[in-house]
View 1 (tube, rainbow, N blue to C red):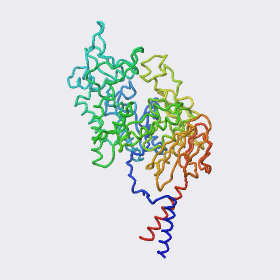
View 2 (tube, rainbow, N blue to C red; view 1 turned 135 degrees about the vertical axis):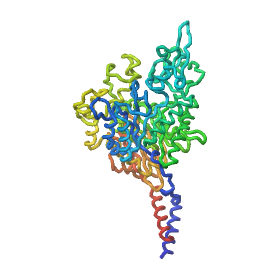
View 3 (cartoon, rainbow, N blue to C red; view 1 turned 30 degrees about the vertical axis):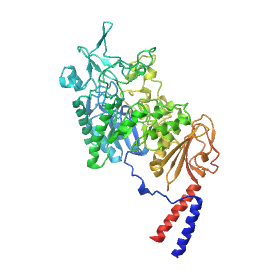
View 4 (cartoon, rainbow, N blue to C red; view 1 turned 135 degrees about the horizontal axis):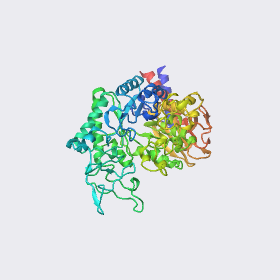
Length: 606
């Protein structure tokens, strides 16, 4: 009997060879087992705007803790908190006066301990925001520096002014990100201190080993408390060139401004990378003890070449995730399919072999997706981000399609980046519209603050909250929230965690990509970049494709989940539609036969 089976197998294999396939099948055990962060979805919470538990109009730690279940239901792997540390709030927490304590507006350090503990119980990793470039001017270090303490004087960068036309001027022409001179001379002082952001945020001097040690100890303090990592803010600003020369002006016919300077002396210096490599060593020292990775994200708006250095150089390792802002900075409504392909291919091709890609649609500094691209494109952009390989980051509110609140007036404006301008131009610089309270339901204050709250919300709630809120989207048959849940679940499939990526710019301005993995389901994602209906031929992606089934579609798509498509050469996509197909074809059929034969071989000979 076995001889007959073997003869049948020989014939079958011969047929298989004639059909043009082999038996090179990768099994699950051959795939690299991903670490907890490698395919993760991270949710960014802006603490002031997530949930106000005590009615003072500002979100707090207890409010976050009481609503962590939302993140579990959504399916994210980790949560990143914008700064919670003690601060005068000149820049809403990015001006830190104590790196080891929580600001009272958010609660207590014990509240944060409880938040960390509950997060661990729920399986949600905790990432804190670390702001290394500067402290608050109200930090004890800077106050002692002002008093002339020589130790703490060296914690900051001080320079004498220069005389121009018989008048004292700052040491050079450097301009702060927040549209002021980068130098301030305190009352009663003879020297200027450097601040690349607000004047209440004096830059720390990392050429002083004591400063580096202080920050190393701060990292240890929080890692010992159980946090799973840090997002490191504005890391490419940390070092400045020590000659303190003027930076080149880009256009001499325009006024001096941050945008009109070539920042060759204040950004992207090589010493910045060494700081990150040393902190990665520190992070990894904890992993050596318990085999749990402490995760590092780094923020730097810079060139692709510079971004890749954050991953590491030579045998040094750095950031696990240098933020990829391509979708935020370089993709616009008028972008074409080839622009998507160029940016995605470029990032992946530039990465070192040990790197993991990441994709970000928005954050606390940039307009929201639904406002930047339009409501009719927001769900398609979510499909694109979530199904590319690597890490995805979701800014709070994106999962329900929140929009910028452009009704915020000059009098309501809180953002120092805007307050340092004037009523005529503040809208060009304000980040307040993207930081408004989360819209939980249609009750007073959108459910962010209690209905009987004693204070107004710190920023006005978007007026569309009665229609656009989480409760309504949970109740609706289809919604952005339900789409995000489906996408996060789908990306956990083996093909999306381990499969190959191939991107395509189709002739009718449709962007497409495939996710394929031998012995697993194969997928095609198509995104119509056009404001009109188009036809798509999936055979342009694979000649042997014969059938396609809709797995997920953008909210306004004509194609619906579970629709079967038999004519893969003539698929109609509506304006801005994005559709995920599970595909099959002759190659898949041949592979199935091969797997069956392999199973029979094992049965016969084992």
